[in-house]
Amino acid sequence: MKEHYKESGVNWIGKIPLHWSMSKIGHLYEVQLGKMIQPERKLETDKNVPYLKAINVQDTGLVYDTQHKMYASSSDLTKYDIEKGDLLVCEGGEIGRSALVKKEYKEFIFQNSLHRIRSISNNVQFLHYIMQAIRNSGYINVLVNRLTIAHLTREKLVNVKVAVPSKSEQDLIVSFLNRKTSEIDTLIEDKEKLIQLLEEKRQAIITEAVTKGLDPDVQMKDSGVEWIGEIPKHWTTSKIKYLSNHHLIYGANASAELDDEDLPRYIRITDIDKNGDLRDETFKSLTKDIASKYPLKKGDILFARSGATVGKTYIHQENSISTYAGYLIKFQSDTNKINPNFLYYYTKSFYYEKWIEANTIQATIENISAEKYKNMLIPYPPTGEQHSIVEFLESHTADNYALLKELENQIHKLKEYRQALIYEAVTGKIDVQEMLKETEQEEVSSS
Image (cartoon, rainbow, N blue to C red; front, side):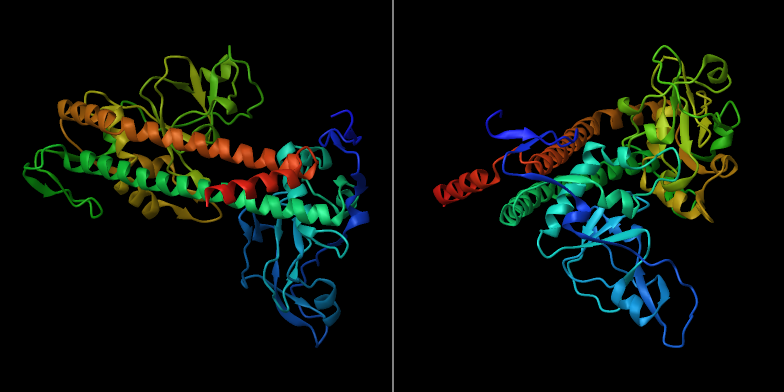
């Protein structure tokens, strides 16, 4: 390291190869901030053309649409045009996220929530990978002020210092990363497809058990609920407000600032993963005086009431003192009528999903109030049969659940490896040329 590397002078980069240099992005690339929205025609010759904005730049690539349009002059169409090979970087929104323009689009321009980057003497895709490294390293938070409305202004972007090899080495690194990240992305995609299949299988088992029971020969009757259809003859259908020993309660309207593990855990929507488990890494707490007003007991169910996570549920299985946030609604079961675990499993069924879709209020934000939740109809058997169904589901979905968690862990590790590989390549920590030779030799020997 000592003989072949030197200090870059930039903390997130660290040491770089001796033959690399440090330079500002603005010295290497042409950076153009996009056009401000022009909703009306100023000149007779102005054209109404589609434009791209920050939301069009996704981690998966650039998403084109012609939904958003603004007026642009002929000079605007030249100044803010988009060419194949350009790099678009988010000035706002997901700050620093970038995407390559891979297709030719005529009379498409970009809005001032994006920067367009071009270069003749440097590889633009090399900067695309640098931008990923900047975001993954957390350095993007140093560049922008997260305490206010954050923006990666042109002035900030052009003054970012990056490590630069020769153009030929940039091309080599890009070729290497394209190949390796494509392999990793394929592995991730395969695992995500398997997860989807496992989730569908798990949901099918749950749906059958919580709406039809475990006896395939039982007599059936109409449930009275259109999307559920028939249920066993001896089952009952009820609104969940009649199955609770307390009215549904919204949580605390308090900010999550503390992380003292000796204080009650403050459960928010973002703490609940898609499997209904609590994330350890997002732990926050509330003072005891506030938490005491919104207590959670074992068996309590939380319903998410708004946003992209509307309908998400969590059942509290811990004996430790916890509390919950205002975007969650607490349901406390009357255990003489409903097993809380049975109701929780029902919220993982296909029919619960259908109910959420039918009852979501599409206004400025998706929302299901406590009033709507308490009037949700569910079918249920006698408590003894509920217990048997819960035991069956715990047994028959345990292996499926364990495999889901393992696949998610594998995906997480692959993403971490992908990030590390990009960082090491664009900062010269690995010899890409040597790694490409080794890969080619392995392919030859295996063929």
